[in-house]
Structure formats: structure tokens, C-alpha cells
Figure (spheres, rainbow, N blue to C red):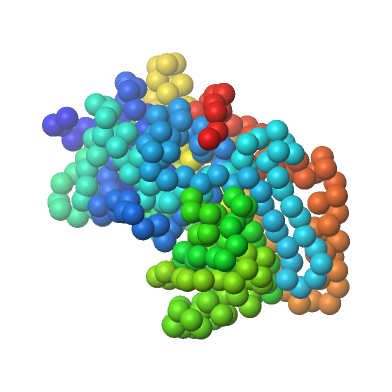
Length: 408
Ligand SMILES: Cc1cc2nc3c(=O)[nH]c(=O)nc-3n(C[C@H](O)[C@H](O)[C@H](O)COP(=O)(O)OP(=O)(O)OC[C@H]3O[C@@H](n4cnc5c(N)ncnc54)[C@H](O)[C@@H]3O)c2cc1C
């Protein structure tokens, strides 16, 4: 592919941008993916960053033939979820068997997802992956778009897709405003070994300082943790020596996995709720974190991004069949209408949970306990939540719908 004229230029080859490229693989569209930094490759050690992958995201990976590559590396099933409130007696328990599923989600390391999608996109002759390629500016007109790279080269396209993450240059360059709430919190991630086996259950304890999750990895005694805390507290926790960190973590989490044994390297990521006021403008669409960021407590962030990618691909491929301009407002508007309301509700729900559980207002603790216990007892409501969060229900794009498969 010598020419710098493309149908679509995807800015950002992270998990979501790479998924979109795979979804457009083998189509009539000529696509460039521009990524500024080389992706991390999987190693024998667990990646610090993992994602709880919904069954809808798994379906997308299967439909673009990336899932076998993840299975061949490392994926861990989540068969149960236990959520409880540290400030009372409220708890809720989800079990995949209750909705007739083998598992509720999968825990997959981010570098495993990335590697599998990248291997796939390199196999498509209509996809050109350019890395390192840092986008510096854009020019959007009614008739076409131009992307300027830091190295001075330019690319022309009929459509630009911003998949360049939470601080999206594409979104800024297109003057798309956001509603944003800086939670002034950070999510600490680390890999922890435990005395008792995790039994393929994800556990989340809501502390007044923020939720603390233990996500099961392939080793029965190893979990990936996400510990949300106010930024100053998170910085303190990062600075602790391993023994003091483990003791503090034990106190925060309790003994449901016995005595915590070891902790690996730690890192912290700022937590912000963001939602773009618009997902599209002249010859441009935003997907993934470039359009929205949610609190990690529901493990939904990248799953929403994968739904964006699958929905946008479906809309664009449909436009090709109907001989429509893929950058036309009417085409892009269909994508925006499909995804915006659902994403916004997840931004609001995760923000609401954070408020509900991160507050000591008198009476709120009883309300939380009541709410959690009532939801736990109400089977139809519980099953609805499970089906929705797992990605079994909802207005799913075709690529996110499941084929029958055997779960190991
Ligand atoms: C602590 C934590 C835990 C989380 N856990 C979960 C979970 O369990 N489940 C879940 O669904 N989500 C989770 N998330 C959210 C998830 O990590 C994000 O939603 C996801 O990484 C977003 O992917 P993305 O591809 O949209 O953006 P990014 O991962 O940010 O990728 C953007 C890419 O664009 C590239 N880029 C940026 N600017 C340019 C430029 N100018 N030119 C070229 N390339 C550029 C970047 O290098 C990067 O590769 C979690 C988040 C945090 C912070």
C-alpha cells in the first residue's frame, strides 16, 4: 500500500483501535492504523494491566479470529462474583450457572489482548498498520480529512476515527467538548498471591475510600487487584514497602482469601469520568476512551469501547453495501445514536456507585445494605444485571453476538 490516500484512518492502535481495524479486515475499505508507540509483548509474568472481558467482547474476538490466540496464551474465567460492603452487612453474589452460562466474564491481560488483535490485523491486506506514527494535527472538511504526523508526512482519508484514548488529540483537534468529573482518585494495580484459592471468583469490597477488587488469574492462588483510593492515599500506598503494603491490603480486604502472601510491582492510574458531548463531527468519529471513560469498579470501560468498534464497523460496512459515503453525517449519526446513550448511562452508573459507597452520610450505609441484599434476593433483577453486565443481552452489534462455543 504505497499511496497515502485511505478510506479510513484510525488514530490509536490500542485495544479498541486494533479491534476496529480487525472488524474492518477483509472489507473493501482501505484502512490505516496510526500508533505512536510499540505495543508491549506478553511475557511469562502476568501483565500489571488486566481487563474483565465480557461475553460480548469475547464474541467479537471470536468473530475476528483473535480469541484462539488469547486462549493459546492466558485467559482466566470468572464463574462467580462476590460484592460486599465493608461498612455493613450488605452483599450480593452472582453465579454464572444461575443464568445458564459457564462463566460471567474472562480476566485477560491487556498485553495478551493487544498481541492477539495485532497479529490478526497484520494478516489483512486492506489494513496498513503504521508504528511509530504520532498524529499531530487534523484538517477536517466536508469533502475529506487530512492527518498530519509528527514526522512531517500527511495522510488523506474519507473518515478519521479517534481511538487515541482518554486524552484524545483527535477529540481536542475536532473541538469536541466533554463533560468530565475528576474523581481525584487513582486505581492501584498489582498482582497478589493468596493463601486460599480464588475458585475462579471475582471479589469486590466497597470501602469508604473506594472499591477494592481481586480478579482471578489463571493460577488458582494469584489475583490481579484494582484498589481505588483518593490520590494522596494512593500515592502513599504506592510508596509502602511490600510487607507493609500486604498488611495494609489484608486489613482493607479481609480474610476471604486467607493470608495474602506476596505482591509484585505496583502502578497507579488516575480515575476520571468523561463523556464526549458528541461522538461524531465532519468526517470524524470517536470510539473507546476517546469518547468516554468510566470508573473501573464495573469492569466495563474497554468492553464499551469494543461495542463502539463493532457498532461503528457495522454501520460503515452497511454504508459501503448501500453505496453511501462512509463520512456522511447520516451514516455517522447512526453510530452515535446507537452507542451514546448506553455509554453515558454507564458513566453515570459507575459515578453513582462511587458516590453511594464512598460516603459516610448517616443512613446511607443502611440504604446500601438494604439495596444490595434486596437485589441479591430478587432473582429476576439479579439475572437481568448479570446478563446485561456479561454482555449477553442488549442492542448488540452483529460482531458482538455469540456463536455457540464450548468454554473450557
Ligand atoms: C485501573 C484500571 C482498571 C481497568 N479495568 C478494566 C476492566 O477490568 N475492564 C474494562 O473493560 N476496562 C477496564 N479499564 C478501562 C480500560 O483500561 C480502558 O477503557 C481501555 O484501555 C481503553 O482502550 P482504548 O484503546 O480506547 O484507549 P488506550 O488504551 O488509551 O489506547 C489509545 C492508543 O492511542 C495511542 N495514541 C494516543 N495518542 C496518539 C497520537 N497522537 N498518535 C498516535 N497514537 C496515539 C496510544 O499510544 C494508545 O496505544 C480499566 C482502567 C483502569 C485505569
